[in-house]
Image (cartoon, rainbow, N blue to C red; front, side):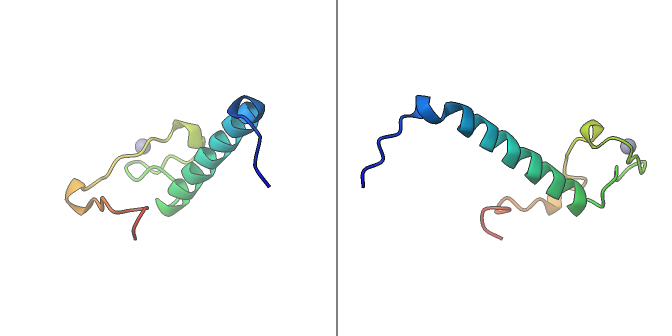
Length: 67
Ligand SMILES: [Zn+2]
């Protein structure tokens, strides 16, 4: 059966789905990093956290596409 849905029909759904996925990946990244700021231990609001490689020489460019 041919899928006749257009992007316009699914726009709202797609926007929400991407937003939900980004939020989930962010949560996973926070848990992976210990659930708190690696420098000062701050853990009150996850929205305040940002992500960087603490040691850029250990950066794995293949992650997460190819672990
Ligand atoms: Zn901090």
